Image 1 (cartoon, rainbow, N blue to C red):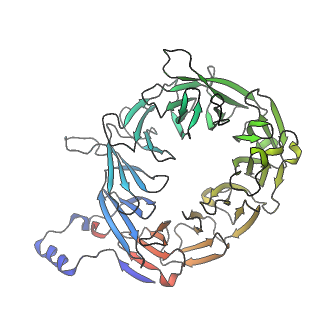
Image 2: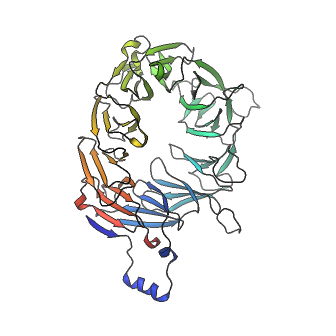
Image 3: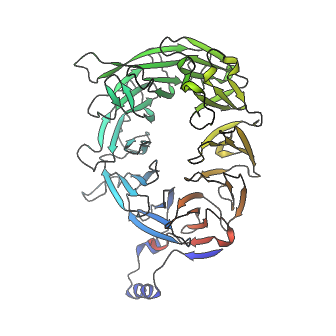
Length: 530
């Protein structure tokens, strides 16, 4: 393994600084790193001791190039954009502010594609500590978790930032949602929906007792709030939505499940006839009663048309509801499946007629549910994969060109367990991967070619070729904290394993030909703040 130190300054410069007594403050300040993030062609470290962002890129020889930029004080959240081409850093600034020059809270936006440049800085009037990023990359919404430490906090205030526009008087835009006592718990950005009043994107805000919808295309309009109960507290546990039939503008719907209720709320968008209304759409609400609390749900296309599929894991059953008539069809399940996701686009044998195929998983393995024969021939619609006999807690999708692959993670905290599976949806086969580790972390490469498995604070890791399923085990020199698979300058990709020892270190290997013997170990990444 080759070693490299992160400080590239010449001996003459060091001697000159020492002789003049002008020693940089950063040389005597230990680095404080709580946040790291892998990006498109770089990885980022936030050094809070020096209030700086360090963005590193990898060249053809596995050397690191470093760009250092200032960032805000008291960083509370760091996220990457969905395309990993930007880095969002949320800071509280100096609290309390004593001088006009004291730093305010802000959202800092950096280029993650390699240059590391500061693209935008959105200044805030009050510190917030939570961030939600639009899957399409345009909007960022900031809000409070209630732990910001402010003397007075409006938990229902959201700051909506349009990152396609520069900072201005209305960007960020503060919005306080109408509240009946609840506070935001989860935020969901919809894809475009064909509503009676036109195509819209919405922000769905689940509080701990109701639901609000904010029109992202008309942020000047009031939100629409739905009270789920007037008599007692109903706690939302998740939402799903559908645009309905593409040619129609009257069948877009939302569904809300709750934590304890044996029912699901079905919301249908309708035109708002009142010209003085605060918004140009409204909602009608139907309550669908079940015999147990649903564990998951999704809108699906079946041989009988659009349905809301709800899993009742404890009853080993699913219920299909026609959203137009609320007619129910029950489907018995051969096992207790608690989760559902549509895989119609990833399989090679999608049913004719536009019907969906869903993947079911949970405590008793994995199955495929063919919705093309779920209404008329429900008993023939379930195909259980017999080779997967372990409990599945999470499913990790693989990017193109291997989007037909899913990695099944055991149902234990921290990816714990000894058996993973790589599920091939194209031929419905499952390749088991065994590990001797008690818990594992997982990183899938953005090019869809590799999966990196590692145990935090251990020196052991492995890479699995997702085409051949060949695993290669590696043992590094230092314990591993994080692993990134990033693009290299000039082409190719590199695996970067971070080590949180001293002033940070990193082991870099060629992701296409990983080998400890040709790895480069870089030490002192934050030494001296260079």
